Length: 219
Image (cartoon, rainbow, N blue to C red; front, side, top):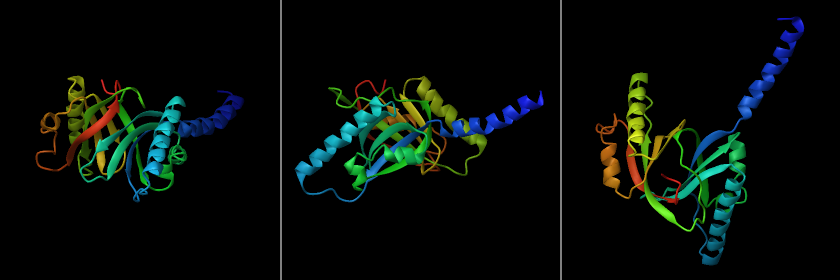
């Protein structure tokens, strides 16, 4: 390679690395309970409408791909959002118009994620909503590479068989895997995951809760 080509390549490489770093990544978000909402029902209703309107805006901009409330018995996790952003700061700014988040009534607990099988789309005010099930599998930092591979193969089998309709792996945090099943039968989902390595001996935690999504989001 000529000297001029080498110089050009050297100048181009850092630019390529910066562009790669800025490429949008998947984020899986739990919206969690913050401080108590006001007693003013009209104000809360207005916040709720603004909350949904912001989701519609983000989806129209191609930044948000799925969202919906869930039923956490502890009422800590209130809903999920799946979005793409170039950075965590950019992601946080997505919620600037959302008074729930801006005023601390909800907090954004986000992790970069891998969409092994993504939810189909977002449907806010779609004229219908489906109840499904979300399964949260806890992280096991002591798992060997072989065990990790075995666990991924197990979940892939559930996806391939149609028993799981969507699956995300979270890069950080206490939740390692998030799965969605198009059913209202929690026991069936728990049974499907009973043989997941680590569930029986409680090496990893498993929670199965009600999840609501727009029609067509989970096939």
